[in-house]
Image (cartoon, rainbow, N blue to C red; front, side, top):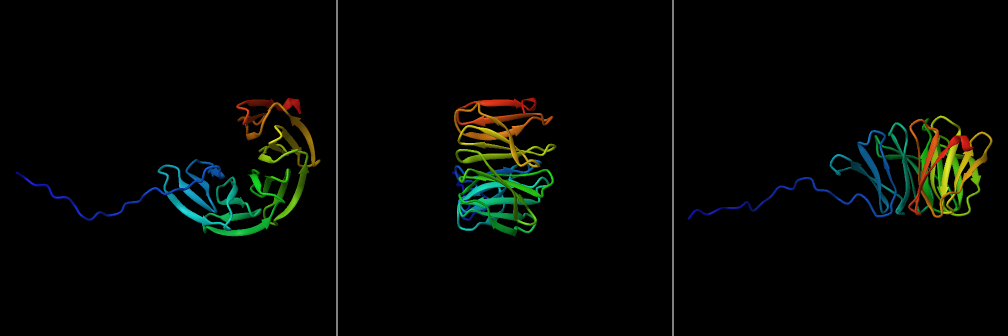
Length: 219
């Protein structure tokens, strides 16, 4: 009777590692080729085709709470429970600059189409806009009654949108520095904001399991 022999030594092949912590922030590149994911106090850059980790960015020992990418995907903006905002150069995996942004943890970030302006929102109920190169605040918007959970720039208009635990979506004008519209259709936290392809309809989703469309002729 023939016997079968088995290998006793095996070569390790690449294995998938944990790259995301439940409830942490994440951001997707413009072409969908990679993701930036919060994994406790680290940021994992993940190949979306096979879930392998391309690189790991070491944070500041505090849990990552918000992430967003620049339009050209060359820079990553992150925030942690320490309230520190960091700009990362993804080509070198090094931080370019850092500054403290809010009085509470940051919950959302967005970069404008030019890549030079960053919007942040947090548990202090504020929405702030920053000059990325200088690291200084250009706008400080107050109006939400609870934690601000989402922010979004309009690509062609000088508008910034924000959603909150108070169920409201606010539209801020970057020149007049005023809130020019408030949409209050949600009964719970606004969790996400998006724009239609033509840029003239805002879509919002919330924990109330509802989504709404807001045409801008309402402004």
